[in-house]
Length: 91
Image 1 (cartoon, rainbow, N blue to C red):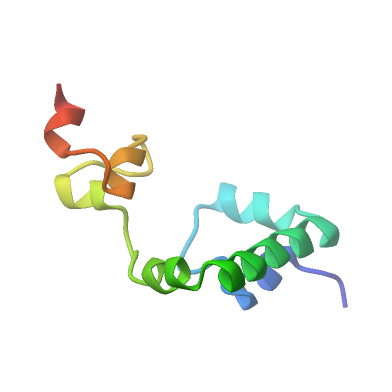
Image 2 (cartoon, rainbow, N blue to C red; image 1 turned 30 degrees about the vertical axis):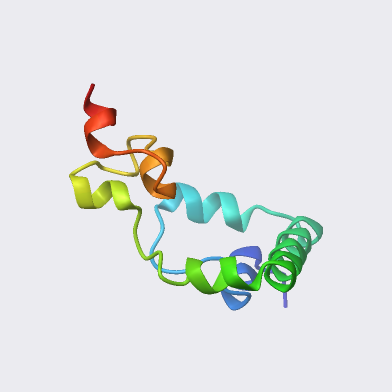
């Protein structure tokens, strides 16, 4: 059986939901070592920052989408993190 990095990342809880074919291809192209590094980093961060992980489970979609922005086409990092405001992005 060959290694499937996208499946391993899904099983680890890193990937979820549907993805574009381009993203699916990218994650599928990761080596086993690269995949293990991502999984290990996620697990270590969860152990060190359990409150952040617990809060991040509530992030189903970026806040930018609630303001009418297409998050896939627009960098709205400030809105995602809550540090920016929608009216600031329009200025």
